[in-house]
Image 1 (cartoon, rainbow, N blue to C red):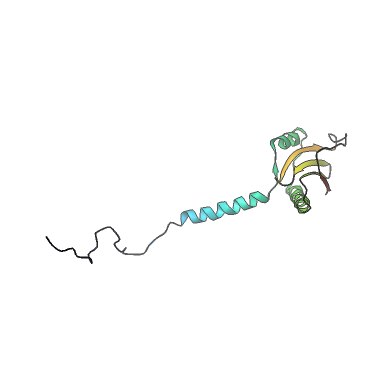
Image 2 (cartoon, rainbow, N blue to C red):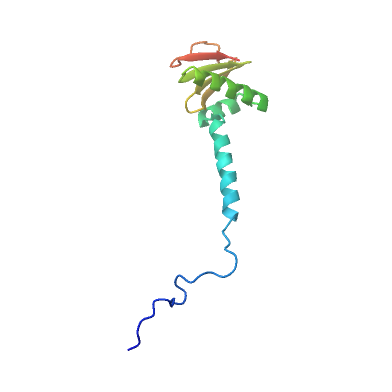
Length: 126
């Protein structure tokens, strides 16, 4: 029986690699882009299905400028600790969940004739 030599390495196990080590980088750029998109989405105001339906029924759409104004108003309301706010913007009344950043429903001037809004803790006029 031959003595065991401790300096010999078993082929394929723990053998040093020859040549440069390459790491996969394709996923890194994709991840960074996805992360940035997700961060931007979290700050954006979303419309509930109900709000989308109401806006469509009333032939109302929000321009980028109006969306920006709405986001700013929600930021201000959030800073004051508001939960559900009525946002009055031009001829629109928007009921917004501030902490979820979601427009729950939308009314135009004609639909808001009643002038009674319940279950809100704040109002913002922009």
